[in-house]
Length: 191
Length: 182
Image 1 (cartoon, rainbow over the protein chains, first blue to last red):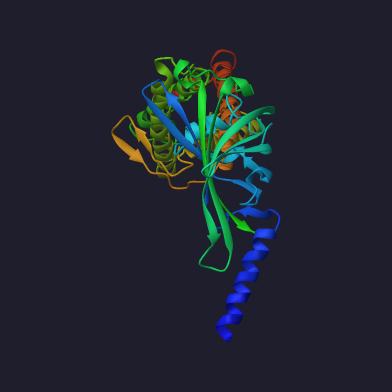
Image 2 (image 1 turned 135 degrees about the vertical axis):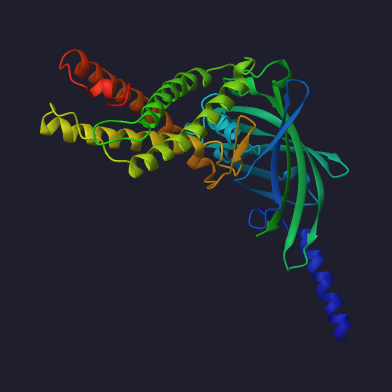
């Protein structure tokens, strides 16, 4: 009898889940299961890989209707980190990010186009260095569900790229360093 | 002759003074030049390396200078100076030492902000004693730049004053810093 009740409860819960609208998730910045990295060519010989250490974001996600998903991310540009103090200082300066003037970069999604197999194209407004332009993030739903600690999580990764010039970054680093690639991986905790 | 006496400066102090003067103006010129180098300039990496290496050596020299000043007799001020001039010159010297040291330390705090040491001409490394992070690196950079300007202006006034003592007042102020008093 007890087993039957529990089974019924579980069935009810999952039914409820299916019926539910998109849930809201917050980036797990506390446990830091979220990363925003960038990669840019160096002389055409190799790549510089760096990351932003401070950012936050949230998304809404409904597994049964991914097209209705929304995501927004805010990055603290002064937290740029390429593991080299002088380079990071230079990146924060007026040659690159001008963090005094533009302390935040934001991405706000406008539409999500599911491509099947857990993949989607997220179109949104990216505001960076004071310039807002549309970018497309190729996103993949990596996994999700109940975590071992009583919460519910969904995790994604995504990539995009853009030219520094399109966002008015003053410094020209040469022909091999026009475009920067962005990689992000993050887990959201259901609120 | 080697040490200072109550009459004047010894050779070591005189040598340190002129080496430091050369280093400070050299560092200033190199610093102003290097911050505007383009990424593809052959000096883009070497100029800051030389600037940092000389800066670290100058910190050591200035600290030794202060130790030497403390261990030696203090030369009496030039007698023809007024009381005001005597006390002013004492405070100008203290002010110069303070600005030199703060400028050097602020410079040191920039490359070490994320915990990396400063290599001195490939000979040895000055470790990062305090990795203060991004805000501190930016602040240290601002202070370093402003104080460097203040320092060269202060040092130029100090030099012009020495020339004034030599050519107008015709006293021993400048000569004392060129050779020890017999």
